[in-house]
Length: 181
Image (cartoon, rainbow, N blue to C red; front, side, top):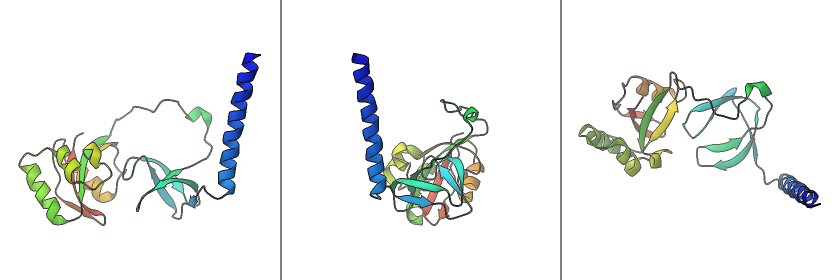
């Protein structure tokens, strides 16, 4: 008898959650976007690792947004046998780097001068970077060739582990990288 009550309560909670979602959708609170270009990268973080390629017309549900990035949810179907509950750990061919982004070339030159004098890259990233990874000391995590914009990819691939890049200019600002792996 007690088990039936819990089952009923659980089913009721699930029904209420479903109803709440349906009401939110009906009221138009869920914002939907659609991929406008032929192919678009889906990344794990802004400027992070590419985790999927989305085709033109793919429906996206907006979860959060900033001035330049939109966090989205994609719903679709894939073959069940292609999935695993554990993230694959193969890092063969992966690189890892730190990143500092600032608005002006003058700032970048001053930071680069400090780095060449032996300053700690991660501390300077936390202090000066306006990039999305600043609080993590500029750590971009593991990534693969082609995951980032060509300017980033070229600058990082030229470096050996431990080396610091020259200043890289993009539309967003001025960047400095330190390759770790």
